[in-house]
Image (cartoon, rainbow, N blue to C red; front, top):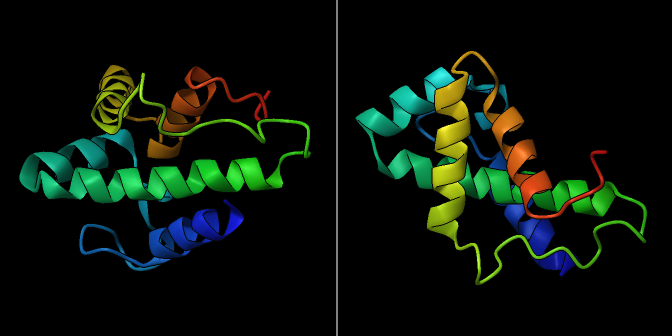
Length: 115
């Protein structure tokens, strides 16, 4: 599991074409995310890959008894539903960061490491 999480994190650290050099999705506002995926719908999946890596890193940094069994892609809440939730959170407050929306998703999935 940790090897997969590290691979996701490393792949999320590359700077895709939609991000400013050195910034990445974490530094993006929800407005920038919305503009990016409106202009280039494929970029939303790249943001989501970063989100999965970010949530994996949260799990890795949490104490071993917290969130170690958290499933980031449960069958009951598939990727498309999670992406829709992030879009909805961002639509409510475009000035917030994309990472704010990802942290809200993490909590929605049952994550407690951020509490």
